[in-house]
Length: 213
Ligand SMILES: N[C@@H](CCC(=O)N[C@@H](CS)C(=O)NCC(=O)O)C(=O)O
Image (cartoon, rainbow, N blue to C red; front, top):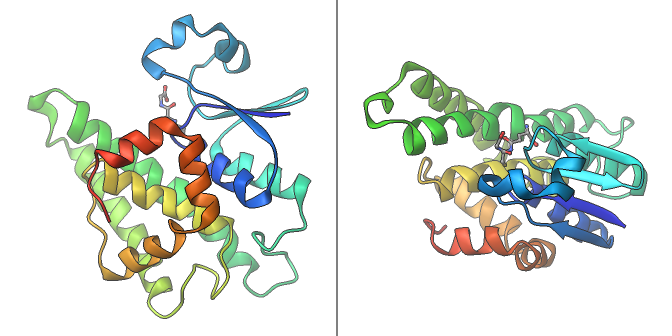
């Protein structure tokens, strides 16, 4: 049985598992209480989420976990294969969702929502917000005339990027424009997204009390 530790970016993994129709167990992780969660700390002693356990295999990094699961449980239309002209753009957005969007958004979130009041306008926070905006520009240009990042086909790149945009929206650090709003309406009404939300009760509760699309 696959076990996912933690929601947060673990939502990406749960969403993918729902899309693939695979059985899994979600072990909720309260980051504030991790010192008492010995099962989780045995899996990831560094204490961050998400982590995946698949038999003897343990791994972290949400995008790597997506690639691992897709490689093991394909073939699936969620992946673009090397023989497809869209392979490069698929990989690019799969990784940009974390490296260029959710990662910088984490810095914005900590800088604006958690840092001491006197540090809220820190240079690094403004720099991270600019990084998010420039990568967002790549996404918006891509979606200007097509439904998904790879044309008319939903792929794992859309799971990666949708999560990042929702992170910005729900933390109050980003307001989607018309193109992103229409895109998120497409991705977040998928039955497998909705099933993942039911599985991820903390994410569901957070979404309910956050800015809406
Ligand atoms: N690049 C990592 C980011 C992981 C990450 O930042 N996780 C957050 C929650 S979603 C976390 O555990 N933060 C607490 C920490 O890093 O100690 C991924 O995509 O999995």
